[in-house]
Image (cartoon, rainbow, N blue to C red; front, side, top):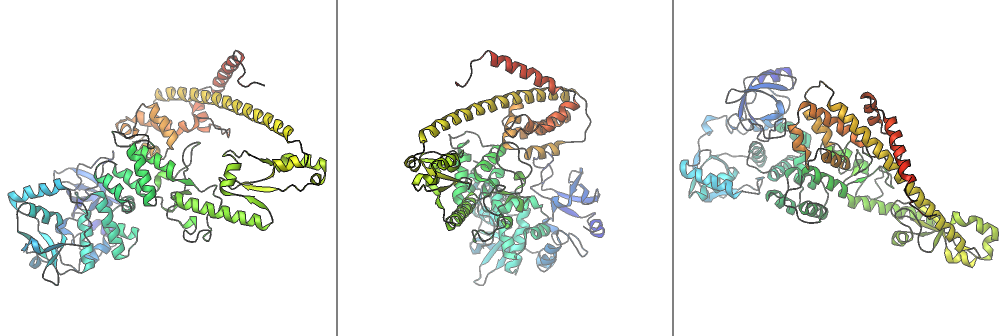
Length: 613
């Protein structure tokens, strides 16, 4: 915003957004109130006074125009958030011409609902409350109507007032009548509904979507015209795509608004219905829960069920021809990196466990499967063009396990090459080499049939025995790996415990860290989040964070950083953060390792071998 424009705001009156939240995420105590700008407090923030003379600091995106001063926000030419909006509204003369500000009494039976009215839900309790008030004092705030060619009127705004008046037994209602174009009517409805506290989230979302479509503007342009934050607008527009059952669950109070928005990100009504069932059941459809699923738990559930990493995709992400109707993944709006505002919870680095994270996460499993199938078929066709016999699809799935182990009547060609060489020229018998394409990861393996080997005189039984020994060796290695992981886990856990104890008793000074702590928590992966909640003995730590003292917040943030290092992984990745913290606090991890290793050896010496020779 220019310096001239910012100065022009001083002394002006605005209304704080009804959706304004305080630092803890709760409704702001002054939300919806008129405020007067007193002075600048920063580049885009201002000191304002409230009706009770409280002075607070707000951002320029936290307010909107008052109803009575919608066109007089700034008397000078504008640039910035409200420029486009004011320019269009100046042609309407809705509030600025005193000669027009005379309400008429219009028969309610002649007033039709507007087809562009965003509200689709009229809460019974709200309408009843309006009716009771109107019985006492009448309709104080006039409706806004525009005349129709047939002598009737279209309600621009005042739909709830009309219903309340009917319920109160009124036959006429006060209204301003204006000759408005469709565009002007839609624009006014958008502005009026942005200031309404009683408009539910879905209807608000529908109003945003309808306005953007009617005026052919981008989401960012809509943000500039209305002064709303990108986060609110982007999430509301996604909520507008929620399927009917999800909308009903939201309005019935069965799911939280944040959960409904995450559910709306799942493409397709079928997948959304599946996700809704999982949420309503409480935990993976295992039984109904009496309490609403927490936002974090729903987030983890939907991520696990409906997100897939593109890092190891079988196809090129910039290939727009593989499935032409889908286009390239790099240009897909359902890829996490395409919309960092909407998919903020999917960004960040992935931990050792849990669903994928980062800017290459697919949120459309159906499209992912379609592309995977198309690439597998293309690879199969390329192999067959080289004269290879390929086993693919379900037949391949039956021939090879999820761990890549062959089963059934096939043996890897590499395991019998020496035997075939001994008997020379395949023993006079033609042995066909077959290529199995693993439908899970696209990898291929060349195999021969067991019966063909037997016909060629290869001693398959001996190979089978060898394979049995190989399986035993594999199992032995697996058990050793598990023991090694258990040892590393115990070492890491002990180091983590001692670091926490030392950190808790060490004085530290830091600025207010609540917002940072909430941001860190929002980006922690699912499994690590479960560990943190277990550590603090709470089911939903979001509320607990708000109540934390400064030292508790500092320790909590340290926990979030170090928890990812507690579990050892098969990749032998070093717990660098944990080791750094241990060194800082004087924790001797080498001594912990020595003690735990000695205890493990002592335990092993007194225990029978886990695997027979």
